Image (cartoon, rainbow, N blue to C red):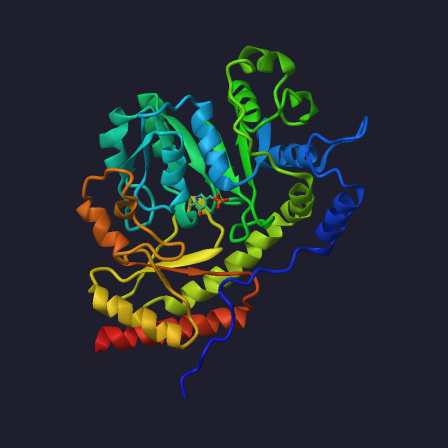
Amino acid sequence: MNEIFTGSFTQQEPIPEDAIEAALNVLRHGRLHRYNVLPGELSETAVLEQEFAAQMGAKYCLAVSSGGYALATALRAVDVKPGDPVLTNAFTLAPVPGSIASVGAKPVFVGVTEALTIDLDDLEAKLDQAKVLMLSHMRGHLCDMDRLMQMCDAAGVIVIEDCAHTMGAAWRGQLSGRQGAIGCYSCQTYKHVNSGEGGLLITDSPELAAKATMLSGSYMLYERHLAAPDPEVFEQIKYTTPNVSGRMDNLRAAILRPQLRDLDQQVQRWNERYDEIERGLRETPGLTIVERPDDESYVGSSIQFLLLDWTPERIAEVIKRCAARGVELKWFGGAEPSGFTSRYDSWRYADSAPMPASDRILAGIMDMRVPLTFSLDDCRQIARIVRAEVSAVYQS
Ligand SMILES: *Cc1c(COP(=O)(O)O)cnc(C)c1O
């Protein structure tokens, strides 16, 4: 009898009780809008920004309606204009090129390596094509951030970091999102904190923070922020920065604050699960483990492995067999975007030149979510199933 996994790859943990209490408190007083405060009252949203800025060691923080909105706001804040080229990863998710398209700009895709990070040689060759890099730390893999920042600084290219999968991760001890000019995070259900939808943006630049705040729709109420620059900075930009409403509300902020306090502990729990699955997959014939560099502290909220140079038919067979045993694998190489997967040439609104070396890797990327509702036993079982099915197809 083949063992079958019966857990759900999309089931989160419940919202913590103290977060539920805080949410109920907001519901009971009814002041959900972030600027709707009693005299002397601090809104949940403003306090969330203050706390997240402190947690990240950033000067400024802005809470917004989604991760994708944070990315688009960052692009607007650094003055990306319609028609401008913006460098970005070929291996990422749809909201990243989508944010570039949303400001009328054009993604210029940069290749992916076997480490699933941006190809720094390809980036170096393309640095003269744009003034901004939207760097997606896709699936939590951090590239050599020292080399990347050195290259971009030397070329005068502004780096915006998409940290949707790296909230709590670090490169050589520096938290992810602190290397570039702006770091953007998602608080959507499948990320590292869960308010259904939501985003956070951090920066040390007073000008970028002021512009982002105006852009998010601050109705000139920016003095009610606790992690924003001084009013004088707003004076410089307030008449020339449009309102593109995308604020966070107090209900979401109330839910997020207790979760952010638990982040380090959650990261540890994710990594226990990740490491268990990785251990179980090592030395499976035909399967390539994605090795993590020593300089990277990751958050194992998902795991990837490669079936490099496998035919699409055999990969499809592995997916089918694993699915029959309850294990949901996502395949980034599929010809059509499905669910949360997609690849650069499926975003047909953006031109892309073929990238054969990246195509080879994308075609072999297998991806699995690792929700915290999995026990360590679940993780061992999942690894046994994947190992058995990959081996069976490989040897057939
Ligand atoms: C989820 C995600 C985003 C955007 O987040 P939303 O909150 O869903 O808009 C951006 N980049 C990546 C890589 C993501 O996975």
